[in-house]
Length: 161
Image 1 (tube, rainbow, N blue to C red):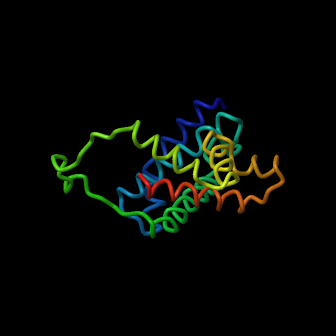
Image 2: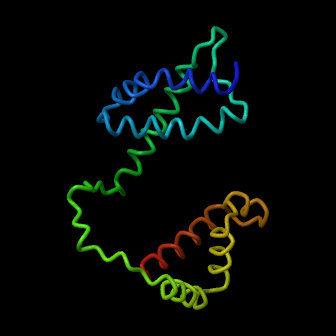
Image 3: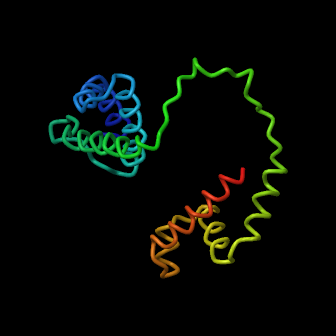
């Protein structure tokens, strides 16, 4: 079965996947979001060779169920830090969309230059696209040390801006 056929078969069960997520206690709209995240997570894996088809040309429900359950649990864990905003309640006339990017960039650069060289270098390397895991493997520095340093610098820069 081709990747396109697998994706189409997966999409045919869309309402089923939403019902599965609703059974976890989610609202219909949140279930829709989680199912969309499931598609985003599975499509590249299917294109890279993941086989989620049973021998009788049917989707492996258990695998999809586990992906949906994991996404739901991750959302609940992160949910404590997420604030939901209703777009209808926003008064766009009061929001200042004019941002001086040059000024913000210079503030960030100045603050980075004030930081300890290790913190600055870790932030720059990870911010340039290297994953923390790869950086940890290549440098023999513990993953959590790199993660905490990156997070600390990022949080400090967020507060600055």
